[in-house]
Image (cartoon, rainbow, N blue to C red; front, top):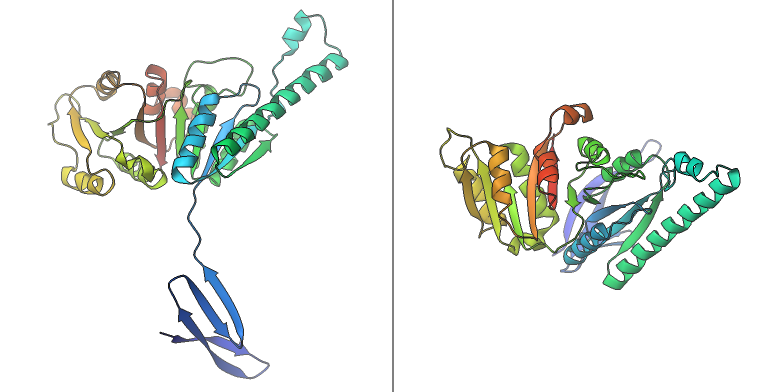
Length: 325
């Protein structure tokens, strides 16, 4: 049924004429007709954007496999962000001195070798995406790696990255300095993978009654709806003197029914960090932990570990972390 709606005014020098636009609706698209001109607006499919942070000199197969698997399951667009930081190379001056070769020619040779390694890594990522049949593109960012990745995260729905990434030529214990700095300022949820990717078979949703924990559950559900069919446990810890009732029991279960109707609930008593770690150690491989965190500065993270930091240090399993301001 056509509908007539009065629009704005056509403005002349001193004359105003009211115009009318006629809209005709059908089940597939909307047509607007005005003075013989037809403008069609067709429905487009919603698609999330996932970014996979990659070090071309130390390629993470786990990041590649996890990001591609999620993009394929959710129909998302995947962007491989290769952080080719100009300050980062596979060699050091100290290593060159040890080899008694610090000439400009040697530096050029090492730099060219790094370039070929990075190019090969990006090509490998593209081939893997094509083989999996996912929509993708590649960014080659060449400035400071942490600054580039934080900027990329503003325009992403989800970031996938290896927990052990350093974007330096040396190894660090988890959580690495790079990951700590990233988590203090990142602008989208983060999925932290470990060394070996195993498809997710179960979800553990950490819940403390706070808004950040609920926010993480909602963001995970919105971004990865295909995982709602997985077994899910809501895990809470209330200290030594708390009861065994879930915080905001009625409201939380009402929300969970809409996203994870078959979820089970467990409340632990004792020191939360210790009890949660002990409980998670009973889980098998393929368990993904979902947790929220309040936004904190990088200085605060260095002096006081977050639950995500502790889980990376003690468990080294995959984590989905969403930050609530």
